[in-house]
Length: 122
Image (tube, rainbow, N blue to C red; front, side, top):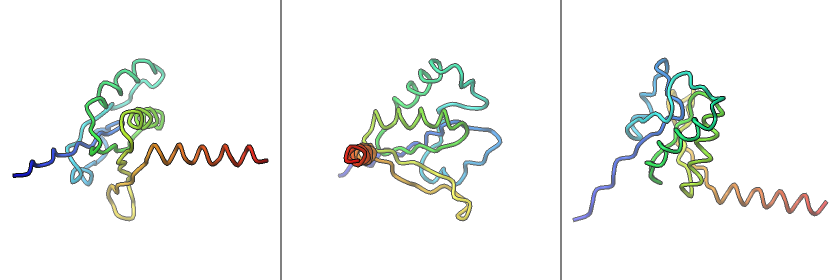
């Protein structure tokens, strides 16, 4: 008998009560990382809260970008330090729902190295 995989969780970078996340629920249970009008200038507290929530993420979970780009940036950086890749959910207006995309830490490193090499050749 094979074990059933754990259901995925969709971590929402900044959950707003005014936004409908219904189309993301097919990817897993929604869990806010932060919510509402978060005080982004309290960056140490923000990082602590993000790390404490994302510490519970697994490689098969999703990160849904919503709200503050600063919060989203810290969430993605935290995620990629913990996991090799991020299964991101982005809202697509034409599909009227969230679509998955994958961001791989190794791809970012490779692009940075290619850019550095090109700059050194100049």
